Length: 189
Image 1 (cartoon, rainbow, N blue to C red):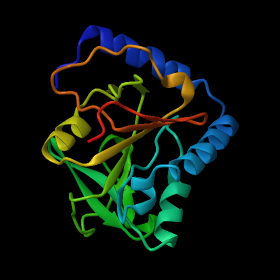
Image 2: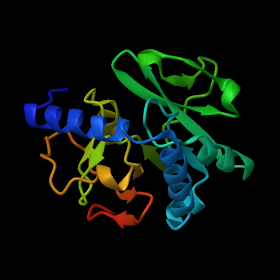
Image 3: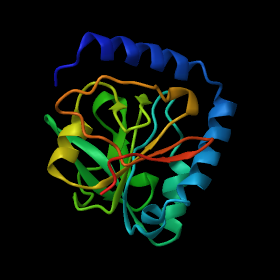
Image 4: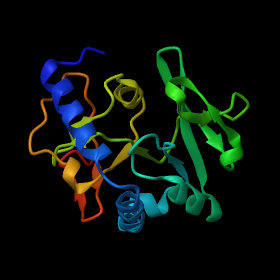
């Protein structure tokens, strides 16, 4: 995917900002985000939840996944195959292995299912209308353009940017959840 210079600079700035967050603050913010997720009815009611395993300074999702599994919901994580991404079901964290980009992803024997109820997407930065900046590889945008699934961006309040340049391939997110608030973007169907 092409990535314009403005987005690349903004991504680097936002990553630096997020990387400067202490682990203790990240744990607190992640816990607050987990509580706020429950305010979204489509998340509460979802039976098949797409999520991600955090790397670096990303919002911690392990407790979100663990709680979903303990409630009998199905949890799916992305696996990158060549230049595509697919979601595979995990039943616990032993279903994971180190994959591409040193990210924990489902093992080869985990069942594939891309028909999810909702997906929690990793976010470097996001605008209030739902333009998301990821890591610039375009896997989520490519996947979401083919699979119309409701999305939730979880991020720190300080990662919300008033205006992010939108590229033609960008897929807007439906919800933004930070440690402080829940934002329903203008994209909701």
